[in-house]
Image 1 (cartoon, helix red, strand yellow):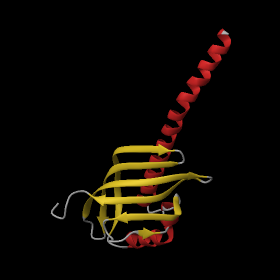
Image 2 (tube, one colour; image 1 turned 135 degrees about the vertical axis):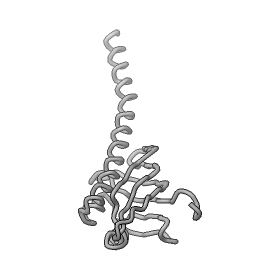
Image 3 (cartoon, helix red, strand yellow; image 1 turned 135 degrees about the horizontal axis):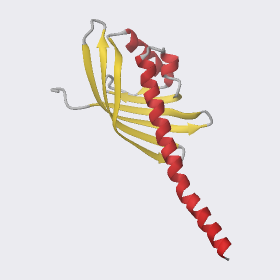
Image 4 (cartoon, helix red, strand yellow; image 1 turned 45 degrees about the vertical axis):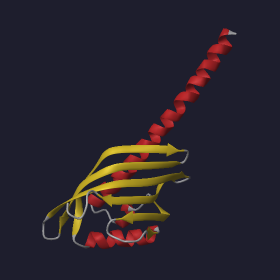
Length: 156
């Protein structure tokens, strides 16, 4: 009886600890994917590398457009246009990150602090309140939706 009880306690202990490990792994994974995307952008690796973990059905809200961006193809073209335009990302930091995991879905929220350098050498600070939604499928975690909101009002 003692062996059976010890075995059950071990099984229950593993069952209780495993979800924590899975959630921690998911959190580490989606944060690493996000930071890798920023690193690819800073290193000017091209849109294929920057967008590699973005789902085809990706959607996005951002402060630069009054409407939702629908699809990876459009988001990729917009990313390419931005990289040819006024400036390039030179610094990206994630603060106050939180990952909530619900099965195969992970919601990452954080404050973004970064900087971009314009074509004429001016440095622009970038602050945002960000949410990214990832779904895990057969190819790993894919970004399916993002919302990038500016910090403060128009007077800031």
